[in-house]
Amino acid sequence: MTAELPAATASRLDWHVASVTDVRRETARTCSIVLDVPQWPGHRAGQHVDVRLVADDGYQAQRSYSIASPPEDASLVLTVERIDDGEVSPYLCDVLQAHDGLELRGPIGGYFVWDIAEGGPLLLVAGGSGVVPLAAMLRHRAHAAASVRASVPAHLLYSARTWDDIIYRDDLEQLAKFSDVTVAFTITREAPSDWRGYRRRIDRAMLEEIGWPPSATPRAYVCGPTPLVESVATLLVEIGHDPARVRTERFGPTG
Ligand SMILES: Cc1cc2nc3c(=O)[nH]c(=O)nc-3n(C[C@H](O)[C@H](O)[C@H](O)COP(=O)(O)OP(=O)(O)OC[C@H]3O[C@@H](n4cnc5c(N)ncnc54)[C@H](O)[C@@H]3O)c2cc1C
Image (cartoon, rainbow, N blue to C red; front, side, top):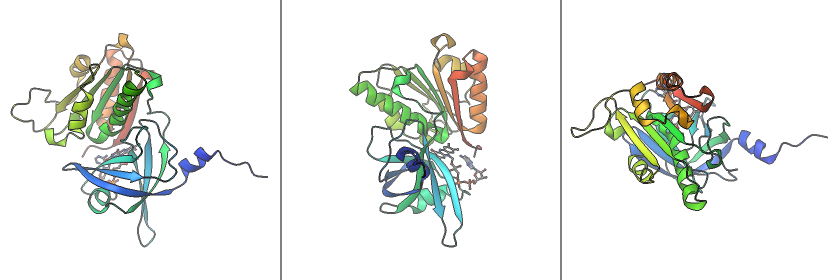
């Protein structure tokens, strides 16, 4: 007699072919892929999927992509930054199109996740495409605020190279219309001439101005290139935040 795996466990580990319903440009270097995944078991904000590409000769490449859409949405959305010499991301942004199939498995991850029931306040810090899972958290928070009237205050601090590299800029500005949500950008390369916000890499002073004080015991989520994540996590602990409440996800090296 063989023991059966629970259905949800089996489906997370199995590869599925999702249908691409749309590929839309977010910025010059990023695209969002909208997917219809048969028998999707549902996900939590912050989780990711693995995507697998298989060449005609059988060569395979597999990468992880965070889920941008909140659990409440019917479609699954991934947002991919195109790395010029990358194996997988140029295919996803330049070649993949509506009606194609895409092999993926998930949802994956039980650590870098947040649900409204966990409460807050939330301190979200992103670099580049690291905003993807944090946007899913803010979108989930907005749904919960509308449907169950649960309010969790949130601050997002987002570092991008230029104003035009800010992913989901309009959406983030909409999400920031909630009275208890603030979104602050820092632009590390070319800022518009009338830009009055931060123009430097995230540092201690910025985290003290934008973040919550340690006495507020926020739940911090930090995501992006490895150097940014390590520097921000170290600074948060130096400021006095409980390391157990600082969660990190590293996407890879800086470009
Ligand atoms: C849990 C998790 C979630 C992720 N979520 C996302 C996401 O939502 N969106 C997203 O765009 N990426 C995400 N990534 C990164 C993604 O998995 C790939 O690493 C990325 O798309 C590069 O793959 P590639 O095959 O194009 O490049 P590769 O062929 O792997 O690498 C090509 C070159 O680019 C460098 N490189 C690799 N990754 C990066 C990077 N992230 N930034 C800059 N340079 C890099 C490599 O060192 C190498 O020099 C996530 C990674 C993890 C671990």
